[in-house]
Length: 434
Image (cartoon, rainbow, N blue to C red):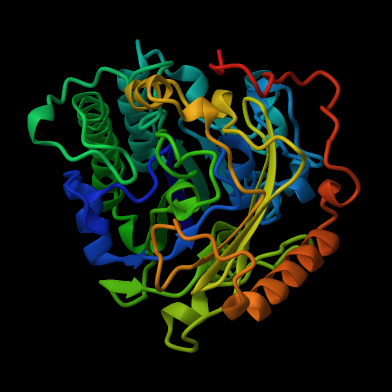
């Protein structure tokens, strides 16, 4: 089958199919005609490590991507990228929009046999995203009988420096609710209104691609996957291991699979590579660390994993932390002695400015956190040291350390993972990533 991978920056689950007041009718239709995963999580709440996790099927530190590609961090082995693997198995692999797994000068190493993104002449992020969708649509309509993999990446819903890109979709911020956990303040309402407009543009791009699949007659022999890299670019979300940071939207259209399914089982984006291998009847490569999701879709199992893991090492600045999440519990461990908020790792915007003005830079954070998500889904009550949870705490710590050892995590050797040669980073005490 053909595979179309549509992905965004910084969207989390803030779209209509997840119940938010963010109108995305094309994504809603995709959910109703496909499969929606309610408990899907990224391998990292930062851009390049998250995408690396999905596209290599490995923990980011296992793949070598412990920071951002545009800041000089690199994959250990680009041949393990999904595009490269599919190309070696007879697929035409097509890059139609943004990617974040390699510097632009090195995109050829990822395995794409056709780079349509190089033909994108759109002025500004909004127009470039729509043109990426149109390039994908044109390719789909003209493609021959060779199976293809098309990566359609949108810049939206990312900020452009301190604001979201101008999209032409007006949203009245008087009637917008800021996302949890932001205070209901005019600045935060404006921020969210701009995000909603940005999501509308993403939805428009999805509609363009879906229409091309239907019109070309390829809808019934194409797997369509929509997801994002991590939570939205607001404080306590992106670049955090709370569910607001690692929780992602995940919608799939799979020919032959029952429509309108909603899956509540725990799912990692590392599971998508092995799932696509099974759907496409390709041999599973040896390096994959995820689980196939097919048993969830065909009724063969209620769950495929009992826990998942996520990580941050570098983002704009160094902020080493790891977590383990089960259906009920979350353990977060921060490494090193720095116990303040790492401000460069919070995207600049109205919401960040509001918190800085009211003292967030003076607040301290616990190095370890344990949450009972059934009783505390907003992750506010730290249960570390609570006797009633001592056994849970010990079990999760042991499992986290075992996973770090199994996957070759450099944090087992040192709290100060060296900056790779040629990479650059902000200082932890700086205010802005720029």
